Image 1: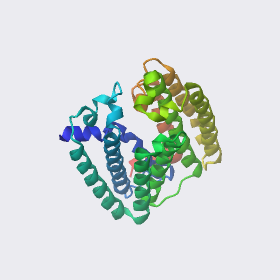
Image 2: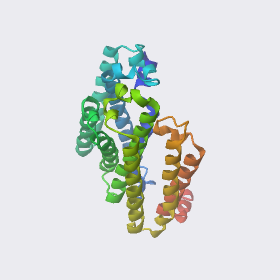
Image 3: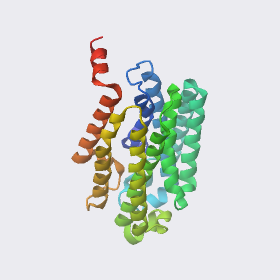
Length: 292
């Protein structure tokens, strides 16, 4: 049962909570090791919250998931995990996460509670409202980024917050498009909101989100204290275009974690991360740190 509970929490999706570390990285506190325990704790708190939401979501969507070619194998939909056991475990996760968030600070607790209530509302009814479903997913990423900043009480550029929103919107649109292609005429039987979308509409929205994200990130680099951040723009553009290529590929899995299985995406993300850290902290700073 433990294995089924962990699977239902979808740990493979927890990488989305890594955005909590953005506040520490972009506020130039990466080498401030006093902040690491707080940020790591905040990360696991959001993993527990998101895990509990995934459990609740699978309970609510059990009937619809049974009609899906892949989601029908999930523990609750397949009957391998009892609904009562899953719900009890979700409640325990929520209580533990709430206590942990309160111990960090009140602001972090408030934003954590906001994230939970928003995602719970999404699972219960907001996901059935066209456009709103996509916006809620994107706002969830923004809340994560803000939570990371509040946990260690730092500020980062509003442009980065906007980029987090647009990136999440971009990924969500790509996933919605694949669901329509994969499920075809049976799409509405799995997720009612898919009846409201069309591939043509999603392609237009993806184009808008892509352009807005490139412009927003470019403006962030233009206005950043370090002008060399502009060197990271080509890598961002390549990553976005590469993801669009994967979305239109026949073997696209439909899940955003496919980006970690594609060599081009992985290489571009690693190069971007190395370049950002090198620019923000500078090679001399690292040398001084290593040399004591």
